[in-house]
Image (cartoon, rainbow, N blue to C red; front, top):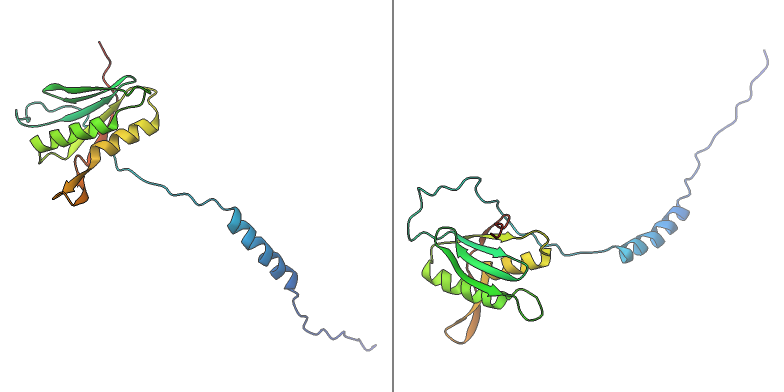
Length: 165
């Protein structure tokens, strides 16, 4: 039998310098082009499927703000319209007046924390968020020296506006 020759295989080194160079260039590029956005979340609930009018008291408040294309209608589900707030001259909703009305309603019903926002179809999302912000909190002077945030109606439900007759 003939003698066989075997090749001796040695261990080879893995060349990673090209890969490291690629990573060194790629990572800063990806970080510089990444879009970092700030996202806010508003907790909302849907209104009850059926209204329970038997359990309501005369002093109970079911606050609703109907967002119409020409005005805001602040009302009580049982008592009716409290105040109609027309849009400003430039066509935007008057959230400053709405916030003032929310302060007055909160002073009459301090225990109530829930309210409903009922926008008409095709109301811009930004408008609905502005209305919800004006209903949730407000600023008031604390003793005349400092301004503090006050919770008005933080538990907001959202639904569809009733159709005008």
